[in-house]
Amino acid sequence: MKGPTDKLIFGVLALLVLIYCIVQGLKGGDFKIYMGAAELLKEGQSCYNQWIFLGGQNYGRYLYSPFFAFLLMPFTILPKGITAILWLILNLFFLRRIFQISIKWLDVNYFSKKQFKLWIGLSLLLSMRFILHNFEMVQMNIFLLYVCLESIALLEHHQHFKSAILLSFGISIKVLPIVLVPYLIFRRKFKASLYSLFLIIAFTLLPSLYLGWEKNEQFLKEWYEIIDPSNDVYISDQNKYGEGVHSLSGLYAAYFSPSESMLDTDSSRLIVELSPHQLSFLLNSSRLFLIIAFLFFLRTWPFRAVSNKRKQYRELSYLLCIVPLIFPHQQKYAFVFMLPSICYMTNFILLHWNDDNFGHFKRSIYILILSIFFILTTLTTDGIVGNKLNDLSEYYKTITFGCILLLLLLFSSGTDRYKTS
Image (cartoon, rainbow, N blue to C red):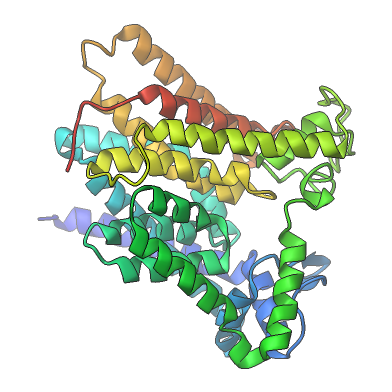
């Protein structure tokens, strides 16, 4: 039972977190764009191909689905900022569930209390930049990560339809969780995958009840034209309007395209200049390589269920970690999808720390690589190194390199001797 001091500390922390959510919610972040799109849709106007006013001299473009704008329409009657505050408070629940699922699947019973606290602390330390950035920008990625893990967790209790509702709901808002559909098929979860495909269609068509069939179809076409990965803006021109993109499309455009940067720097990063066609081929080949590597990572034949939760968590860690790499136009907040990989690797290192076959050399290598990962992804934030060095880190795409390092660590972890049911 918690003592009075523990309760007081918890109460103070809870109050500070609530104040933080209120402050960030009132600032609005990207939620201003979502609510602006909902306002346009409510008036029967297209929320695409136009700039949405954010205040001052700031404007943004809406890149999510018509379905998401449709969902937000009823909330446009609330005072500005209220919906964003409620959303951030909900994000606390999503984050809590992500860690609850991680704790259950990774089976921390092998840990002492000290090891457990160290594991949680290290996982938060290595991922905090991306968690906080999602709160600052009032983004959707923590929810989408929750959707991915919770939908798989529901299948543990054979709740196929509930799992499909949650997964298809997330996909219908933003397509990132769609990577789970082929995974479900591979793991012989045919019911859940079929339900998901059916429900994606249903959710996509739902705005037709308000907009009419023709208008919804028109907006869907406009949405696809904007997010089409073959657009030049997602290939050679990915960094044309800013250096905030850290997916492979941003990395390759930085090092293989002569497009000018908006940053005031004389540093050159061009390795070799490729034509837009060559760049597109390299980009798609790399995406295909990461997907094929995942099949090797699974190390089983298709259509076989996996009963070992720790093994499945490792599989999902890899799959979710490549999401911000393979999808175009993914910015810092999307790299919160690295959280399961971070949780797995910190857990793996602590679990095997005293193993005879782990060895001092191997332990040192893991710590070194995790330290480099921390430097590339977290120490480069402007709150620590200042705006100039942060701009340089974005210019050279250090977060992308950090994510690739994390994938290599996952591969090196191999099969785990600690089996969980």
